[in-house]
Length: 534
Ligand SMILES: [Zn+2]
Image (cartoon, rainbow, N blue to C red; front, side, top):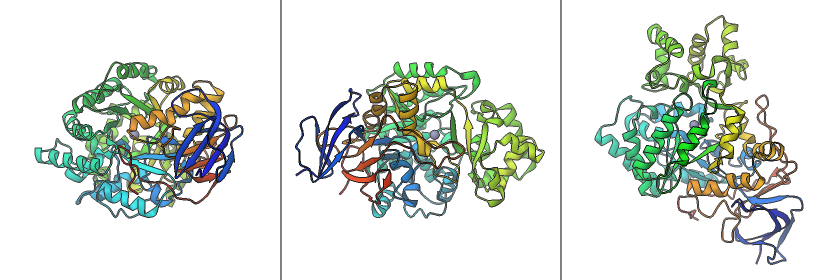
């Protein structure tokens, strides 16, 4: 018998097909029927008059590993209509962890994962998944295995190629994560220690992911002057490893590089890896956000964040770092130079002494201190023990719209639950696409936008039984008002929930009713190829 019947809504089924009026029947946590003639007389009936009924949104690009533990209700995601989080992006994943470098890796992750107060009481992906399952969560979570974590576990933060034995050990760890249900391998080729890898290492690791049916998702080695070379490297890795490629937060930074995304998308259109054309994801904002450590030259972070801080405390290496912010280094994406100090803002610190700097530009902070910006940034990082987050403006609206329109671009927030003023994408990504880019600007149709948040995403991530309104699929559903849905999170006041998304269901259980959290925790760990373990 039917548990829930949603009536009179506009069905947008996640495939991109035009909407129609109809009903969705749910039973046993699954979609029982969709369409105009479905069984009547459910135990509970919900009138969705004026609302769109769509598959719950899948956030393909998250860093919520610790946020899920800190608050399993995940308010900033479920209030957007997100019902599945894809963790483990950009080379950052909760596992594998191995001593002696586990602490080094956790330290690097603080401005990305937040929640430095939490214990990491696991060492494998399976262990982390078990921890999630013990605590429960409002939405589903799946994970990639991060190359940064792998490298840290096997090689620490050493700046060199792996030995044959080390490469084998990393391959074994990829296989172990894939056996635990990882969706594939992720890299973050601007972050230590992943940035120390050359292409051959990444092909070898990708090959293991591909053999298990996984993907390769990458934060490219360069998203500015050498974007095209970086996309070519990703394609080469996908071809060498024989697996699908996902370009993370596809964009191009720097005024000199405006328009280049047309060429990078054309490279994707002209390629096939693992039998499919490479795809991308993106968030609908002109600024990015990350750890300030990632702005430093790779050699300076060899050995980890502590080693960087030691170098900043010594006159000679510090002087070299400051020089290189100006002059650059061959092969290094110098994002400070690309963006300019005036476009980089402090988004999180850990000491009260520097709290007033949050939300302020680095160039202004330096002026106040009577210092050159590169000296001011070194001092700030030292004072904060390396735990500083930043927001950097880097893209153009034209490029953003070009990537958004591309048929294989899905939506991923890249949200970071860190501090009082996180990037607003944490709260606003999905409603912003629907309100700003669908309703106001008409860049996408509503059906296209929903497809990029659901059906396309599931296909790219290799997730089964989510992302479409189809009988037998998980009853992960979002009901929103297409006339009023919009983001309210701003760079000034980012921790604000969106409007126009009254109801959200995960596995047929309400997690949001009338824009209020229900407190239910029906989410499950999703594993590659389907099947949550009951
Ligand atoms: Zn990234």
